Image (cartoon, rainbow, N blue to C red; front, side, top):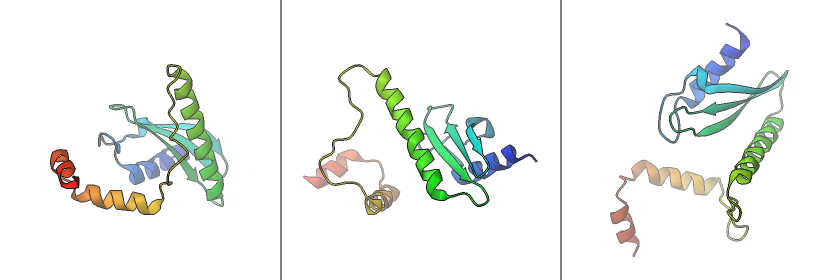
Length: 128
């Protein structure tokens, strides 16, 4: 098995399915963006809903911080290309004021969604 097949299999084992529509990923959904001796960057795109995920595979003695930086740059580049394609006057960036979301907020939302039955009417009635 060549290295690309092995790395794609590792990514498939970690991601399994689309977070948006829950379609199972396949190796054809993974596109290698760059290959360096210590890190590969890839795009995993769902063919059903077109949700995209950038993935960095850190190999051997690669630096995880370099991988995070590479993913951040890819994300920023993707956001810029989307913004350029949008109509003038539409901004995709979140406002700079207000509290920042932290890991605790994400965990809280995850816990809430595990138990949420999808009944938004009851949810909003309970909050009033």
